[in-house]
Image (cartoon, rainbow, N blue to C red; front, side, top):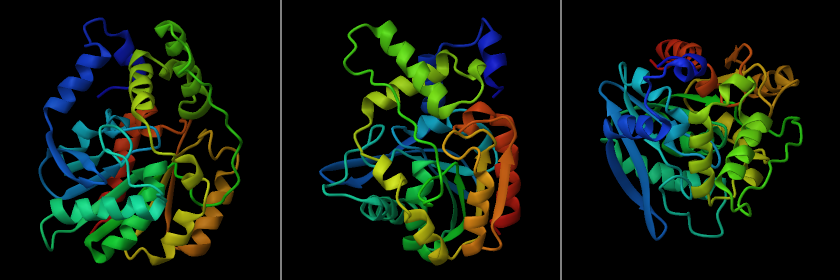
Length: 292
């Protein structure tokens, strides 16, 4: 899939809702237990298994510009994490380990015994991916986290704008675009109709209080216990890490000296959406090198 500018410039391109529906229609929808309901997963492609965890107040659609390309090489299994997307909320009180146990239980049910997989987590999904990888042990071939918190590293205070009290859909849309600029995307041209549509739909369904978990050191605490090779990908202008990316790399390498740390130039926090072609290439390269 091409980047945001080219997609926006094509008058024949489908609208956001039609695009999401078309990609989702190619997937198999699967469910596993989650609290009083179900955790929802989508599966595309064939080949070695690649598991994707999305970010906070997100869903599988955080990977919308990636799943088709990745599915050319892998069986892609993308979660809706508990309390996000179409998945039921984790039982309260919950923390990162509670959510990770639900994810690990789901993977135990969906992945045949003895089959190993690569795990990739974006933002909050990377935070949850750490303890999930610990729980899954040697079944995880590699663990890659993308723009993830949970390290206790320095970050700017980012206050998103409230949209729920606004009755006018146009005003809500404007706030969603503003929030994308504050947190998710570095280039204003990336904040197109598709980005706003995904942001609005994911925010509306978000129930899990992910921020306190992401602000903890849960990923940092989990990494020494992850048996698999680890790697990190960040956008150069990630609002959660810029201008302290080097500090994150140093902090992480102190725990895992072999860590592969990749930075994608000019991209923001939602790097796989803003720079999909570069991200897909970087991730596929990492998986080929680290996931043996």
